[in-house]
Image (cartoon, rainbow, N blue to C red; front, side, top):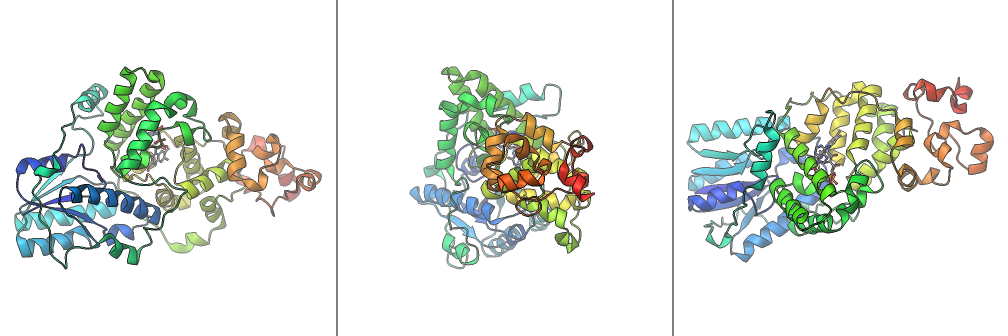
Length: 447
Ligand SMILES: Cc1cc2nc3c(=O)[nH]c(=O)nc-3n(C[C@H](O)[C@H](O)[C@H](O)COP(=O)(O)OP(=O)(O)OC[C@H]3O[C@@H](n4cnc5c(N)ncnc54)[C@H](O)[C@@H]3O)c2cc1C
C-alpha cells in the first residue's frame, strides 16, 4: 500500500505527488493529519486551523465524488505511518517537501529514519520548480517551468484504499477539540472554489489598479490579488496562477499590472528557495510581562501607523508587505530582546503564514534598516483612510495630529476629546525619531 500525504498542498490540480501516485497505478491511502506537534507550535493559530478545515471540506468532497476517501486523522504523521505500516505494510509515501520550522525539520528527520529502517520509500517533491532560482538565469528558467503545460489529472483513475474504523475520523471529530468550524467573516475563507473566485476577480477586474495598490494599505485590500493565503496553504499552485494571469494578458486584460503581479510570483518562489536558517530558539515567558512588547502585539504603541497595521493584521490576517516590514522594523530596532517571540506572533496572526517566506524575511540583512513610522505615514498613499478605519479613537483628528497625536496640546486634546495617555497611548520616548520628538508637546511635558 502507498500513502499520498497532503500537508500545505490542499488541492487536487497541478499536484505532483498525486500525479506520481496516479502514474504508479497502485492503491493509495489519501491522508491528511492534523498534527498535534504543529497545532501546539507557537507559529500556529486557530485562524490557520479554520482555513485548513475549510480547504479539507472541499478536497474531501472532490474525492468523494469519485468514490475516494480522504482520511483526516488527528495524530502526528509518524504515529499514523507506524500503525499503517504494521497493519498493511507501506511501500511508498508521496508528498511535497515541507520545511521552514524547526519542528518540521525534526519531524522529517524522524520520518526519514523510520522509512530508512523499515524499507519504506518516501518520494518528496520540492514545492518550488527544480530550477536553481539563485543562478543568474534563474528567472528565465523559472518562467520556463511556469509555462510548462499543467497535466490534467483524472481522479477516476486513482486507486484508493478506505481504511476501516479506528483509522478514519470525520471532520467533526477535529471540531470536538478545536473550534475550527466556527466561521469568522473577517478572514478569507479557505478552499479551492474561493481561491478560484479571488483569482478570477483579480485578473479580470481588480488588477486594474494593482500597481497603485502595491504600497497602498487601503487600496490593497481590494486591488492586490489577496491570493497569498491560497498559495500558502496550497489551494492553488503558483504555476496555475502564473498561467491564468498570462492568459488574461494575452486576452488584453491589464497587462502592465498583471506583469507586475507576475514579478511578485517570481519573488515568492525565489525567496522560498533561498535563505533557510532555523529560527532563533524561543526565550523565557518573562517577555509576556513587558509592556512595550505587549503594546506592539496589541496595536497600542502610540505610533498610529504601527498600531493600525498590527490591528489590521490581528483582525483580518492580511497586510501589505511594506507594513509588515514596518512592524518587523519596530520589533528589530526597538524590541530586539523580543525578536524571536515577535516573529512567532506575526506568524500566528498572518493567515498566509508561510514558514519559508517568513524566515526569508527574518534572516534578510538587507531589510534591517529602521523605517521611520511617521515618515512612512506621511509618504504611503491613502494612509489617512487606513488610519481612520483601524484607529477609531483617533478617527476625527485632522491629519497632522492623526500622524503624530503626541503633538496635541492640552487645549487641542480637549477640543478633539482625545486625551494622550488615556484615549490613546503616548509612545515610549526612545521610539520617536529625534527630529520628530523636538516639536512634540507630550514629550516636553513628560520631561
Ligand atoms: C516581514 C514580512 C513577512 C511576510 N510573511 C509572509 C508570509 O508568511 N506569507 C506570505 O504569503 N507572504 C508573506 N510576506 C509577503 C507579502 O507580504 C505577502 O505575500 C502579500 O502581502 C500578500 O498579499 P497579496 O496576495 O495580495 O499579494 P500580491 O501583491 O497580490 O502578490 C501576489 C503574490 O506574490 C507573492 N508576493 C507578493 N509580495 C511578496 C513579497 N514581498 N515577498 C514574497 N512574496 C510576495 C505572494 O505569494 C502573493 O500572494 C511577508 C512580507 C514581509 C515583508
